[in-house]
Image (cartoon, rainbow, N blue to C red; front, side):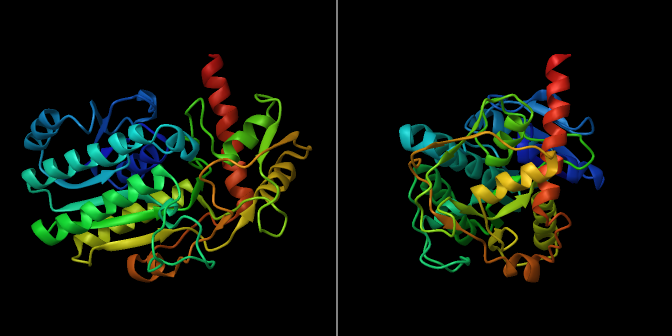
Length: 329
């Protein structure tokens, strides 16, 4: 059997493609390379360059292989950008996901794993937030992902498609073996930007808002190592293959760190102070969000290996150094 990984030339998708290839799975990556990178696709995987909204392409591709599952990462992910350009996010994250789901149903592919987000919760009334909390997204990004969750629920009921939707908290770090990492030039992930600042690639790290109702006034987030997140997808696939129930699972460690705590972690790892500047709050940013993360462990058997903020920073920093060398070559 073969696994179709959409967006597999991107940050999280390339880690998933590696995780599957490491386990001997046959992997086909579908990516339009708008933000993904050809070299990020593992050598053992086949790359098909194309868009998930192209139903003619999808039908032909799905007829040409016997796919066991679709693992769907392709999409847009920058919260403030979604506030500025909501229609682009509803097109890329919702409309095109609908096209992918329709092709999956037509092809009779039995399993679907979806890259969702904790942004569906908005500003939770209590922490940690569990999967049964009422979704209340405060950005078009969160809304666009929630709509795809609804489509999955309804397609499951109508057509029997088995699915897992994984609601990511803040993904960070890089492959511990240095094979791939966050490589998008204009990425906005805090730990990546902090590492770039530590390496002198940015003048200062801007902190957006210091007046939140959190212990130190800065945003509080649950950071998960990208390789642990990929492992959760592998566990989700195994769960569905053994006949497990479809459902939604949070992916986080259940521990929150503020922006200032992340900065201190980067300073510990580098042994040098990090230059910072201060700006206003960004649109769409909740004050705090931490995962209630027991369900993914109990039902999928997920056992994270890299549950340590300093290690997450170490792998992110190592990747930024490697990426700098690659770009300079």
